[in-house]
Image (tube, rainbow, N blue to C red; front, top):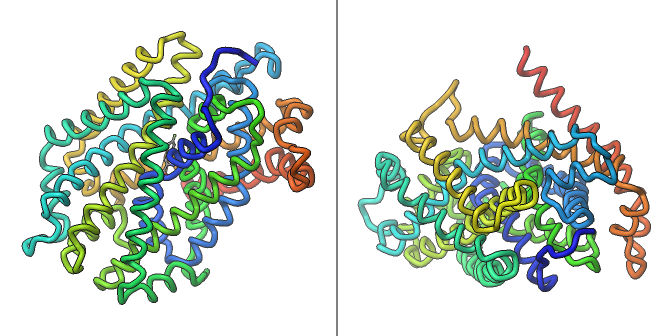
Length: 453
Ligand code: PFF
């Protein structure tokens, strides 16, 4: 094990940072809209199942690769003592880093929108009587310079945190943002649960009506489970590399998966009651959050505060996830290209800015431009999440299952004080060696056959 790498100072610090990575725009924006588009309950059920079966096992694998090698995802996937000089496995790591850049190109844009929405909410825009659907987002999307400015603000905030390092930047900020985010979600839940549409919303979300589910829903559930736990990018490998040697991986992974799933469900329980109370369709697609919701806030007694709390919470979520996306890349440039932390942070911010500017400039409206009936966002999103992430997860699973020596895996997985881990070990190994690869290959084969025919 290499010495001299920074570590999280406490388990709580790691929990907050890892939960911060997992809980993001995917939780509050993507999950409700894909659950809505896939008919609700049946999809939610599948998603929870995918997190428990696939997400959790891959999360243990990613954290383990980082913790044992103390490298970024590319370094961990080409660890000399396990693969010798063979470079093939690195491909999966590089794919994960490429995915991080692609996602940063729109994650930063949407984070910029959220900053704008916070300001608009604070100015009372959403409770004004002349609010109409989509007006705020449409106006914003017509202003390229303003969007670039907002992206820059978000990048500067992210950069200033990541640049301070693991303990003083990432851990410290997550310890503040995440508890605040949980409090805001509690307030919003308290509000939503008393709305007239709450009953119908809960039924929509939790009654598993599988007749409304398609095979695509199944693939989306797996893709979103990976995305939601920040898997397939290298972020969790980097966070794993900052864990202290005595930390027990399965319990850390269970904590992160459970808290992320609870928050996704809470996000649905905050948003759908609002949507049902206002009598709008729950399947409005990516515009659900930025077009549909803002019009509704004005109809509530506490609308001003609900709108403000909602968008502040969304910003904390976006920021803590952006931080971990950054860190996965920064760790790569520091380990493999020998850059300093400041140099790596500036480089990643610069590339993200260029990508975001390019995206903003080429699409005056990321939501409205369509290709074959799908918005640009949906297309980027779908290719990345349903294709790239599963491929990286496939590589990580096979590598952990076949290349990491059994004694190392055992030592990391099994905690003598925890008999459940002893029993679960063979199941986990079978999962990463056979079950997860088989399932991912099957899902890919279905998608390829759709593509061809
Ligand atoms: N898990 C985040 C979300 O649900 O929004 C997305 C994400 C964040 C993916 C950070 C990857 C990552 F490194």
